[in-house]
Image 1 (cartoon, rainbow, N blue to C red):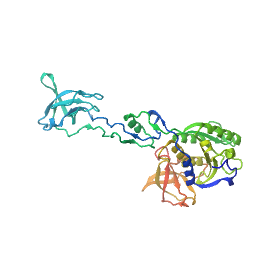
Image 2: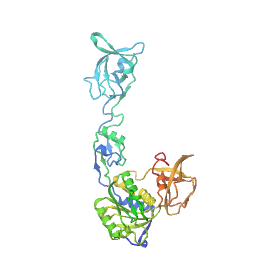
Image 3: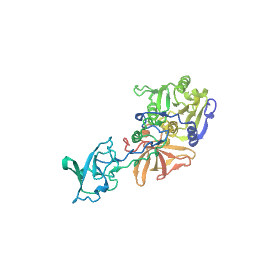
Image 4: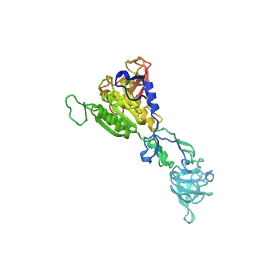
Length: 426
């Protein structure tokens, strides 16, 4: 990285999207992990693999309510000639039988309870008849022989001791938390949520609750970006709107670098002579202005001032969303330690011709529909970087690679899935 930022378009480095992504991800090194309670772990990336410290289940147990028996005692039992066994006790869940099961004996047992030694089958309560024998001794009449191991869950049947339970890098789900809890892992080691500061620049910007005035617009970028950051696991520590004053922008950027792992600015990085972010960054070491061969989102800034990550995004909403998905989100995921950096990729076919340009990577906002042979992608509206409605309608970002001058109707491509078509209206 050079010292400071060039203040004119001539000073920009022109790079491919692939190079931009490579440089961003090389700079995004995982943050130190932390241990958190299970209640705070869902959605976080596991940073250390979890190996089962004991088998699951940890002991042989009954799969249902019934009686634990020895198969040898019932080898000749039939419906016409049932066998009668003595009931020597009851084993509820959480308790242990007082002794091993002896010849001619049965034990009442509840679902999940530990099998007494000697038992090799469980007859369901619905199939047995309890009777009273001499001196009031409880007995059970059984009219069939159980299969070996019938209705028994063996120790380690789910997971053996020492087996890999969860691999590092996966996003923990509520079901993973159940597995961790069962293994006694009360505080898993997960990736720390990166702290992010966002600065939205523009004299024309108003908060959504303000009344419009001539020449002003509501700031749509800031709430969108804050939500996207939260969705990908970041913690937004500051989100401000700043006027187009280079000194003020510079002051806010320097302040943000003291409180955040990542600083993101919106707007003010184009080729104009008075773009505030570009001017504010002129004295900041470790940041470059980029012209990235991608659409939308060509003008950008990136660097590592003070060993933090800095992203200067364009000002148009589609550009903000696209650059976030293509570069910022993967970097934030890597900081946390996720194995999967991008959104899921879906194989699609274009319903119409989509024009592009060789050496430029295009991200096309598309609606998805299932049809013959799989998913079909249709542009969700005019691909104008200032239009908001196509982004709201889109299910995915179709990627036209830098090697293609166009994508013909019916041609296969990949798309980054933003949401499935049934999640909200199309």
